[in-house]
Image 1 (tube, helix red, strand yellow):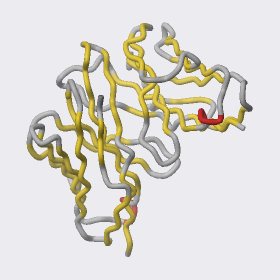
Image 2 (cartoon, helix red, strand yellow):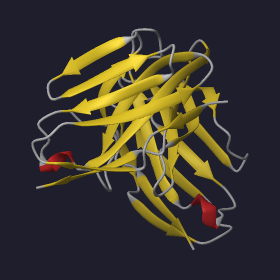
Image 3 (cartoon, helix red, strand yellow):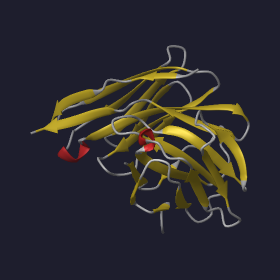
Length: 116
Length: 113
């Protein structure tokens, strides 16, 4: 079975440009979350989507936006790129919304963005 | 706010046992996760604790004390492939269905022969 897939795996942009990152969750998973991981740090929560609705947002500027499609895939968009946006962007999926008995969040391999 | 602390780096010997500690301060606590992340790869799930006590899974065990805001990951019979970063993450549920994992900076574990 395919895991969480992300594209592109690596990309280089310059300051001020825009980037779109894509994620396909595991088949049957309806919840998708995005995390930013700067080198040497733990992942930081950006967004969570479920059934095409935003369910959570982390402390990121409005330059960051996302959406979820009817097939549960998702896009993360970042406008006006800054050098500090260079990071590994991780997408994670789970079967349903979190509850007291849910556990594992499945991560994709990530999209490594370098901003020059 | 939320704060998670774990050691930055640890070194242990192949075949030995190592314990990685994690302390946290958070509101709306709803579970603590441990993930393993090899360099350049995605985090992979190791364990999940929501109640106090020890959860054992093969060579890996995780402990939680909610009253102390403390968890540890115990790795036994260490193998060279266990060299990786170990991420402690706390889940909060401020609103039903709104899930957020807050990660620590990770502990880089190096196994030496």
